[in-house]
Image (cartoon, rainbow, N blue to C red):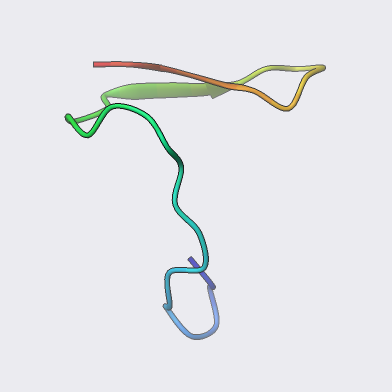
Length: 35
């Protein structure tokens, strides 16, 4: 979301269930998530 307007500017594809942990890969453009 945009911090100034509060508007959603993009959504990630993937599971629709609750994500409890998410981590950015330190070198790649990847996010690892766990429920």
